[in-house]
Each structure stands twice: as structure tokens, then as C-alpha cells.
Image 1 (cartoon, rainbow, N blue to C red):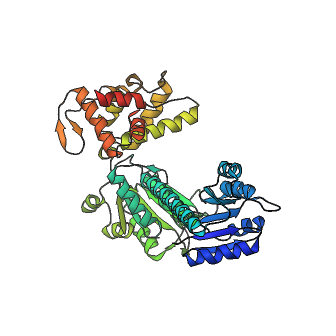
Image 2 (cartoon, one colour; image 1 turned 120 degrees about the vertical axis):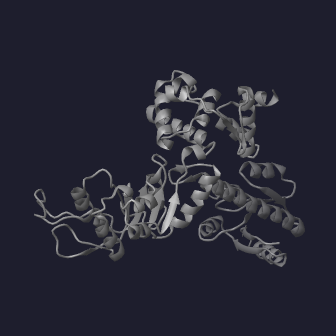
Image 3 (cartoon, rainbow, N blue to C red; image 1 turned 180 degrees about the horizontal axis):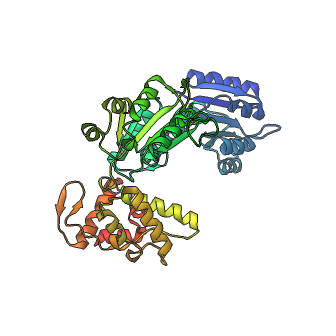
Length: 447
């Protein structure tokens, strides 16, 4: 047997006897004759089980048990009580003890109890670890998703966030490219430093050059003082170049030199200034095609895309549509103070059928509008914009490979089964995704 056992008893000889016996059985015991001393040391090292006598001066075993179960919630406590004192045993269990043993102590029986407690502790750890992994799998920063493509993306982001390598994020407009950039920044070593974004398509060429590289006083008509550019403002942090596909071709050589040399020369300046910023760029343009057209330099593309991450469009993320819809409803419900318990089944079907050309941004706007307009406990079909209400797909995809026209009742039944299969048969989770209460879900499964 293995396990770190903390023994607390005001009788030193009892501590020594138990320690010797348990050590011989494969445990790793430590002991203290004072409950307060034991508490102080529990913050310094980790134990698997606390074994405490009930009757001690200053602080009783029950008081110690209450303190430990409050501060170390997953640490099992076994209380040693006097023979035949069932009232004390019951009181110990009520105080949060995992188990109790009676004097005189049968060491072999005690070892069995301790072994079970150690296993209980290990199982608690595993469950907690699994819960954390599940949470990690469905969220990264402000990004949310449970579809296979998003789980794959989260795995990539976990690996990339710990590096300083340049990243190019590609994907359709509205897929969340800036959220990815922010997640990479705030999950990495530069999180405490600035995250500086700039939309390269929103500024004219001269202003963009000044914003990025800075300028000296008198460099142009309105340059009344020196100004650091965004490269310098992002020093130690991350510079996010959004819409890099629209970066002016005339400025691309200067950008390339800055990225290669890690230096910038302000407009009107004679000296170059060093900077230390991670570069993350994003585009909804296929930059390979822009290269062929002569609109984007090949060497700049390779400098920016050391790691390339492609965000999937919403139409390829399956039931993530419903997950995101509920997420946005929760956000806007808190923001507006308007209570909402989800959406009706017809609404869910429309959201799943629609192809979402505006991606996550469009879905977010639709849910904000629906919550603002609804007068029902749940979002109903009439709360959706006309475009989503009247959308008719020429084919219905159920699961991953079946495409056919089927009656609406069959679509509903098959989608319910698909959701149940996706969540591993968890009916509580399935009912939340479907926007149904458990009774309704059970009734639909029986029809």
C-alpha cells in the first residue's frame, strides 16, 4: 500500500506506534501531537489521509476535522474514537469525516480503512482532473466549441500559446480571428504586457505607416510631436495585424524588414529602434492567390505564417451553433437583466439548418435581437429575423453522412438521438443543448 498519512494524537507513544506499524505496511506516515501544529504543516506539504484522535486538548479531533474539510475539501479524515462511543462516531461523520476507527486500534483493519481512503482521494483527483480536461476541451480563452474541428484547434492553440513564433490566422469574416489572437496572447508568457491590435484595412497608407512605425516631430504637416508607433507600444507583448491581406503593397518591404530585423525606423527619423513583440496576423483573403495577383509579397507571407491556423466556418461546426446560441443568450440575459431559459425546438432546427454566411458574428447579432424582441420565456421562431425564419435548405444532413429529405418529425427524432450520442448518452446535457426539460426529452424519446 502507498499513501501519505498524517497522524495527529496528543499521545506521543501512540503516534510512534502507529507510525512504525503503518510504515511497515507500505504507508508514508508523519505525526504531530498538536492539532494546530498539524494544520500549520498541512499548508506546507501534501497528505492523502488525516488520521486524528477525537479527544485532544486545545483543539479536539472534531474541530480539526471541521477545519480540514473546509480548507482541504478532498482530503479524507479518519477519526479515532473510544470503544463503543457510537455518538462520537456519528458526530465525526456529521463533521465531515470520511470514516472512524475505535480503540483499541486493530492495525490491520486500520490499514484497510486507510487504503480505501487513499483510493477515495485518488478517485477524487481523477474526477477533478477529468472535469478540467473537459472544460479545456470546450473552451480556450473566450473561444467556445465542442465539435471535433474546434477541439483540434484548441489543442493547436495550447501548443502555440507557449511559443513566440509568428502566427497567421485565416478564416472567413466573423469566425473569431481576433478572439484567437487574444487567447494566444493571454494564455502565453506575454499576458501581462500589452495586446495591441490594428486593422490594416481601416487606415490610408500614410496614416497606417505612421501608426505602425511612429514618427518624429515635423515628419509631416500634422506631426507636432514625436510619437511611438504600435511596434513600440506593443513592446514585450503582442502586435495583432488584422486584415493583413489589405496591407498596402508599397509598405510591405518596410514591414518585412521590421519583422526580420526586429527594428523600426519612425517616419522622419534617422535611427532605428529595437522592439520586442510577438506578431500575430489575420486575414480572410487567400494570401496565396494575392501573391499570384502581385498584391502580396511571397517573402512577407512566409515570414508571417511560420504557424498557420485556419478557423472553420460556423456551418462546419455542427451543434456548436446551439452551444454558441445559448452562450450568447446567457451573456445578453445578464447584460440586459432579461430572464431567458433557452430556445424552442423549431428555433434550434432553424439555427442548425441555416448556413451562417456571417459566421459567429451573425449568430451573435441574431441572438441579441431575438432576446430583445421576445416576450416569451424561451426564444420562439417569430423572434428570429425573417431571413432565418424563412430559410429552407434543399437538403438536410443528420449526423455526418446521411443526406436526404425526410418528414419533420423524423428529423426531430434523429437529431435528438444524434445529440444524445454526441454527449455520450448524458440526458441532462442533451436536454440543455436541445432547450427541452428532462420530462419532454423522455417523452420524445418514447414516441
